[in-house]
Length: 608
Image 1 (spheres, rainbow, N blue to C red):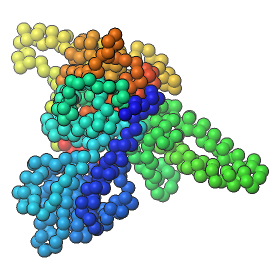
Image 2 (cartoon, rainbow, N blue to C red):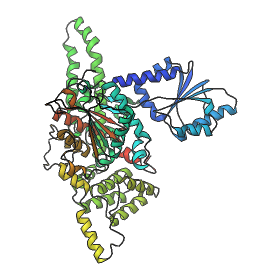
Image 3 (cartoon, rainbow, N blue to C red):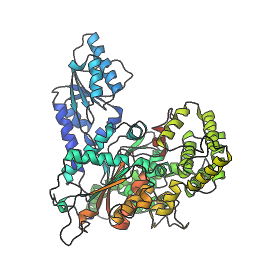
Image 4 (tube, helix red, strand yellow):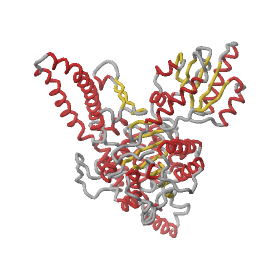
């Protein structure tokens, strides 16, 4: 397969075509009319690969959203369930089948597991006595191409499942997604793993691919390097307030599988508007990676330019010119005007939310925590939010950042903040703190059980002196906190612009270091602070007189795979790094997350 040019990206639409063909083939296995019951998590990913009209062509009569609370469902004589492999889901399906059997209603059932069936699920079906009534198959829907450079598994539960519950079920899915990708684009020559999960994925990927030592022509392969990063290597970045346009859209409105829905407050009409956010939208492509301070001004100038194009119709003299304008230009201009109006409305909503509720003070505290300065003032600010019973997620974010940037919170402060948080937001949040402690996000600094004795007080004091925050050490060694306060947000020269110049995403800085050094050599003083360790493999054999690190175009195509999710800020930072260093970054992730969705996934009782 020919390698792409440096300016181009591998064609990931092939993944969509393969998924569509596989799914339609599964539907055809049950000929005739049938109902399709879809797991709520799979509705948007499925919508990206198969339209409703296509489903109708394949005999789908009605489409239902799976509801585990329903004990029975009506419909035609054939039904297909498209679901994630969960035991609770199997119990609900078994209830549906038994309900039909109780009233002697004959129906054919098929369960399609996405992305694969699990023995535990089949055991539930057997226990409920319905295994003989269903046919079981698998639909290996892994990567959903959200854009030309973004691939997502749409598995937000990976973070809780793997890092909190130590459930390795989804590791196979991640490894399989890479195997299928390389079957299309060719094997990847350089692999770099940062973290425990990354190493596990790489080992399983090698096993599934049955890599051999025979030499291959990697110059014909489309992706030069793969960097696997565990989310627990960098929890700080997703907890920071996003300040790029795309990041703020996600935090304010929520972007689901590359789609956003604007309500009447944005559209100015009674009905809502759904937009597909990708590079096909020229206006969005121009503003998505900008710092928010430069977006509204650009959109205003674009609106004036668009109005000038509209006004050109007044200067048309002949009927032919007018006919040509209506046929070719008018529709395009109206579509652009509609999209532009939505983006301007979204900006106004974001601006309204960010100029009230003490956002500037909140952002200042956040940046102060990243710098490691004004510790007492930061704690006071958090306590003030708790007294006011401010948004529980906002307050929890700051508590998390306080702990992560200081290698834990002092026992006295930890106890005080925890007690106040529980009193403000409910004692069920005790489980949330337990979960965050297990993840290593919110911890207290251990001072020892006998710290009261003079000798142990000295030892404790020495430990505190040598405890220097892991995060602060990484900040110093990688220059994560820019020394200059004068960052040009309009024409940035550094990745830190995504956080107003206050902080460079650690994950993206590690990617830069690995590519600059060609591996982890010379990074020992950095990698010793990273949980899970690092690992690298080089499958490219160096030719005589040539280094394995060649300057051919394929070596500039880099796949960065985040396990546990990544943010739009990190995607933006990597795009900027690619322009700066001449790389083509393809970002793959288990899911796209933000601070709220990350915390909600491990909270006992998330806010409604």
